[in-house]
Length: 233
Length: 233
Image 1 (cartoon, rainbow over the protein chains, first blue to last red):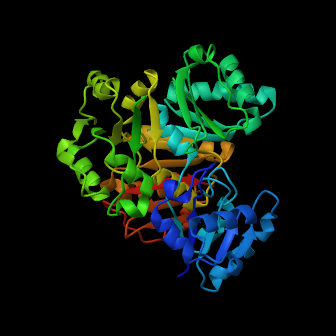
Image 2 (cartoon, rainbow over the protein chains, first blue to last red):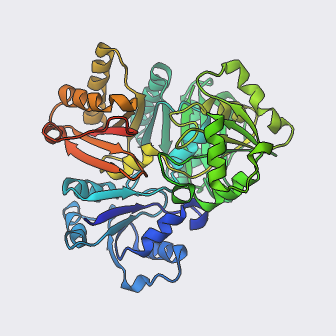
């Protein structure tokens, strides 16, 4: 039975050997058919794993937000012919906060074996280092952009923090990071704690948990750096 | 400035090199002071990373559910003296669904650098392989044991799946796994999908997503095997 391997990718500037188990690199050597978020960066990643892999004999189908959902099922055709396949996203873990989930769902519905591999996840790593409740947490993706919807979302997150003891995690487009921190300070009570985890696994890694009362007077600059945000009490 | 390293541990029977980046093993060689969920298994893990490490010169403080919360802060004393420290849990990622979070919170409040390392997380790996929505998901830990509270929790999870498109993740004491699957089939509508991810990274790894209508007639046995459960529509 063919397998669908889900290959995590380093985030930022880190190298495969620093953030991926050796077995991932052994496994990628055996795969010729890939479904990738971006062909160029996937080729670069495969070469960084092992520059002896000949990427010119590898087949790539691109799956990203420009893909027509109707085209996704056909991407698994090599598995019907008995080939293992690999899913590679731009950074971090495929199918988490990125497009791979659709193709995994189809593979599951066909009864194929899906094999997730270990790799860097900003959600898990920031959760570990935040000091917040790791028994109950929610990843919310991007917050709404509309001001009223965003403010309702802050209210709902506060409720779930206080009543359900549930850590709240979310992300933002990197050039809006500083604005988001300011909005959190403005919108949430001063006793709520914010963890900002920035450039995880990168040279500028910084993971800081403080109450909003302390963030208020703190200098920060997360502009254009991949960053993830966590709130708890 | 000393660092608090969070060392993930293999789950089940897998070996460090299969599920941990090489850098984790380099880093553990430099740490002499550990906060661990269980001293015996932590020593075994360190030896499995590199049997040349002399665990007899390592210091271990035990942090688990028997620990008095008042004793946690003192465990970080070696950092006050300038030593790096490491947190090691029983399996998987420290501070996620296990006791390390308290000590991380204290390290954060003292302004120490906390460094999470890459490793196996059953939450992320099952999420990746489920095919469910990875843009929004909640980890709920253990479900309530009381029948009424559990049934209310199922209702609430169904609401969040349908209205918020939020994948629901939870765990169970392994000897109750089969009972839990039966309870899910009984309690949730047949169109809801259940992913059961069992023995992740182990020799019996199985990650199966099916609608509850199909689980109803499927044979399964997850008794005493570490398993994680995900629900979505």
